[in-house]
Image 1 (cartoon, rainbow, N blue to C red):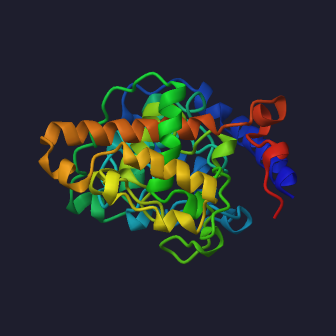
Image 2 (tube, rainbow, N blue to C red):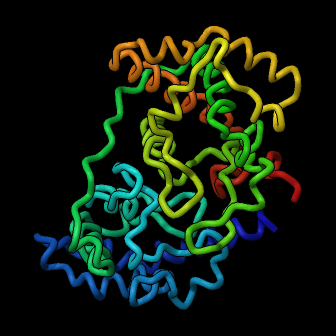
Length: 316
């Protein structure tokens, strides 16, 4: 069933690309203001997102999960801004340009000119009153990415356990944690945790993209933002593995306890200068980023075509 869905998605993506060639091949407008954004939205976006931008386009019921974004709510998953904030114009432009891998949302970069995509950004913002009432918060600062290493990946496995990622995503990241079947988005629709073994993340797969997702969360979904208070967990005698005991086996718990023995206690964290705590948080988040990237097992031709590797799909 998953394979048939992916093939249909691939075919539809080609149809969308073909239907958009006339838009992309037309002479690029000199200014965004010269683009007929309403007509462009009607041609490219309304079949899924609806003429009113409420996610109720004629094709929406057939798309399954996830459903098209409801622009009127002003809630956007893919942002560089903190939880609760509107996205920046650059965030919207990035989503339009890149698309959302693994969903029906195509990448419009190469199909639409930059001016056309910027015109869509302005048009989409008109659907929600929030854009006229408030400004986005400043983007979350992302430190330079370190190079990946086996040691960093190894630490990331423990950070993954301490932050409770396995509760939803499962112990090996396949989206099959004990809470997976009970999750809903803000609209009451069932939502599945991401299967990290598929790679090709919806919000971008580069280390910086994944870091951004971790620190901003996915608004409208159960995925929280990993803020400083969560990531600066204590170790040593204060390390708590009780929650993990319900998910991991005894061998994994022993390894987790050994890791925590080398981490700062709560008293040590309280005594640390603020820059040192920030550095600890950044280091742990980067370790988690590289651990998640290490789970990507889909590298064959089938995966590159359909972003899905049947050899590593859970049998549901």
